Amino acid sequence: MRRLVAALLFSAATTLLRAQIVELPADDFTWVNLRTADPSLSFDLRYATSNNIAHQPIYPANTQPMLRAGVARKLMLAQTHLRRAHFYMRVWDAYRSHEAQARLWRLSPTRDYVANPSDGGGSMHSWGVAVDVTLLDEWMNPVSMPTDFDDFTPAAMLHYIGTDPAVRWHLRILQTAMGRAGFYGLRTEWWHFTTNDWKRYVPENLAKLMGSRPPS
Image 1 (cartoon, helix red, strand yellow):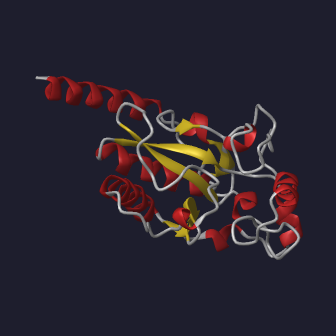
Image 2 (cartoon, helix red, strand yellow):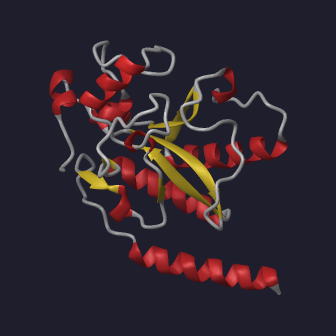
């Protein structure tokens, strides 16, 4: 009976949330706010808090999770895959301004984990084509994952090296959903995913790209 009730509640919540999802702009390059794009997503923007590698806020407290519309569509598809498996996604980071990236680099200049904003194209986050995410259960509680956010140790590698079967299973669920939606992972950060068509969003002039901002 408890399983039946839980299934009915989950089905009702899924139907309600699907009805609340906003139709995104047709132009894939338009900036969209993930909070309004898909209310079923959960958010904990770590760089707007002190709970990150810098131990201090990098973003203003009112920062919104922004992505290019084409990338947001893929993220919503990944969320749909997760919800079918009775899981949800929590977003730790989305768009990151060039200024925020520069500040993060000054506080944690570790090339294997933080992109130098002055070296090449900088961070994929600054292009609006990458997200940092983790997994929640159907009751919106965090599940066991390899590490916390910004854990710059071998334990955070894309391919899990631990022995906990639950962690391995949860990571597989997240990676499968993101892969099916059109994202690929980062070797050193299991939580980081970039859209596989990111080159579409890179203009010929990288300087102009880094200067582009989502609406405030």
